[in-house]
Length: 142
Image (cartoon, rainbow, N blue to C red; front, side, top):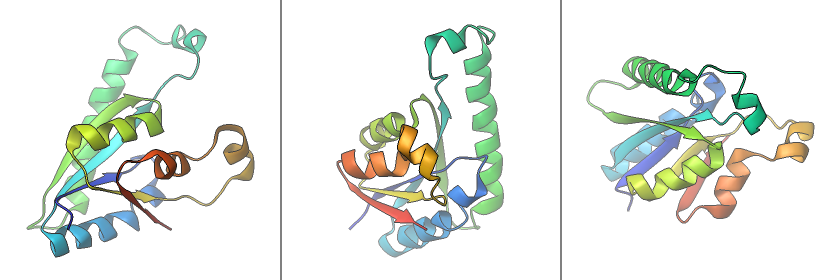
């Protein structure tokens, strides 16, 4: 049923993969699907904030995040399974939605953190936005 599964994680938040990764790996084994793991380097938020960072900060952050993601996957992915690492930069939910098409994913697997009512009220949940706008099925693992 699934040929390409996209697992989204925040490499700085273990809760984003501790439960979601085993589920994604099981689905990949069951369906003989390819696993893609995506992490997003968040956008600065406002253009004025960007001025406080060195010009090459974003490219260095993307490179470092890519190295960290590959190292993390080497420790978490069991022998005999493979995961392709992807790093994007920008608005988190927007980059996840864009990656669905780029990768050709037919399922997205996401971990969900405990709700923070104030944060959700002010900016919303990335998982919620992906679920509402995704062109493919989304499995949110709690």
